[in-house]
Image (cartoon, rainbow over all chains, first blue to last red):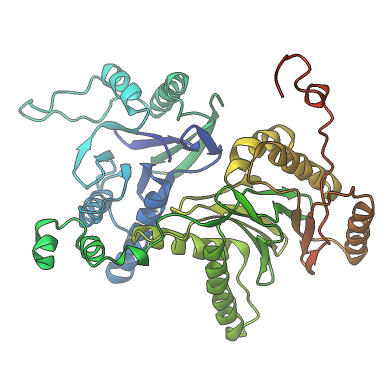
Length: 210
Length: 284
């Protein structure tokens, strides 16, 4: 099982992060397993849950994206990938992929977008999200720091955070450092992917190994 | 009636029909003859795998000369724990895979990463059909100088690392490996480290037998191969009466070397074991 992932959308960037621990029961299988996959130019998915299902899901999406590229001669946009992921998950509604995903990237206007999913495909575009065992520890903290506007407001207020890219990265690092303290399944190493107009960048941070 | 059952529970109609027709005998429900842990590490020149040669039938240590590690193609070694008949089935799948690969005759051959990927798909698909191959597999190899060591379980969970183990090895051997494994170990250091792990497993895993096999995949020259064999014979000659078989096999870019079986030296002479009843009057 892979355990915790987080994504935060900014005005012109998106930060997606996940720890690299893979565990089963009370044992750690490996400390260096990446849960993040880049599906398209501007779409990155991080998944927690049952590793074999996550891997199968990643392969299905990657194959579908390749076919899309052959048919349309362009990369899939992030919102398009979001819909594809939802449909792929619901396709197995009665024998689900045990995968809890966050999809992050840049939409066609270059603004950061984050989509959050449950195991059977219900999804929503949000300003930030956490999934997996650490999500219960991280989400309240993000709610407090990012002051997400109420979804009931009319006109709808943009949920994308006004934080700068480096502030968002620091926030993510703080989230994981805290989650690692109290969640046994989170730890070892943090992998952070940052998507912005100039491309994609990877960063790592050591976490507690206990 | 059967079709009505299928309609009312759309979740798994195939499963309902299968059970209703009494064909649970067509699926794996539990393992019968099993092998215990396999441990593998990367070292300077390649990969080393170790496993004992035992096949247990429940709590009986029924078979003591079971080869649980086999070479696969030109570049890899597979080690399996769990149901041995399923391992034999997996070897049949792999033979077919390698045969087809050879029939292309295109100068390319499947490396360890490709073979493990194939096995992962096989294990995952069988799990999805509720008819798993009840094995945990370790696959190591070296192709074009690149070392690879990975593992896949019966439900399709797979990962690669510098050291892997199945079953009890995850609990007993991995901590030792996490502490003492380092990059670029020599062959001798690697064997010593694996022996340490296998000794702990022998002491503490009830299904382990003191008859081990080592497989190694390395990039070294022929002289070292000879050295390996002679070392194995040396160990063999020093073996005490209660022999145990350990085999060391080495796979290099040049080929597979499998040593003769030999055993581990164990120590049981702790004073607390010598006269256990001496402090307990009336005990026997």
